[in-house]
Image: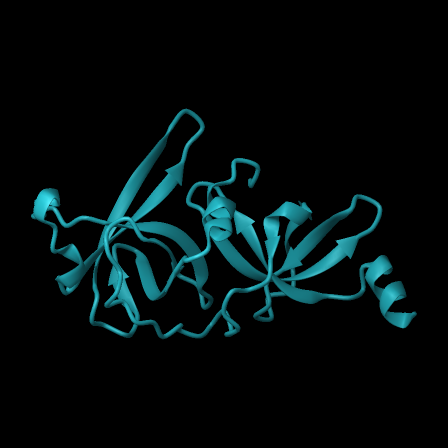
Length: 180
């Protein structure tokens, strides 16, 4: 009964990830509290920065973290099996202590002849991110070293581990139009 009362009153906070689709699709780790009146959630940063960072989060924007690591921890991945067309989540951060997970697709190298592609054997990896715009969507790409199992810097971003999306439902969730 105590758990039910603390959940209904908004005093119970629990960890989850929240989809945020603008301008670049991502999922961030947060501590959430339920608001039974609006049937939505509010989020706080789980790293000790206690101000509320977002309100009115709907159920369809929540997910359980796909890997159970701290948002401050680098995910160790094996990038050797990735090939063009694979859908991925990649850790990234920009001037903060925590990683968010961003959605991307593995692309072809500029030097690739797509009829005789050998991109999956190259030591370099093209990660393309879909950017959400009101009038259109476009793609932005970064070039990363496939063999490097640490943080890589590209422009103002730092990239970490990559998780290949095998489940069609995961891919659909990233491409859903209802996330804001």
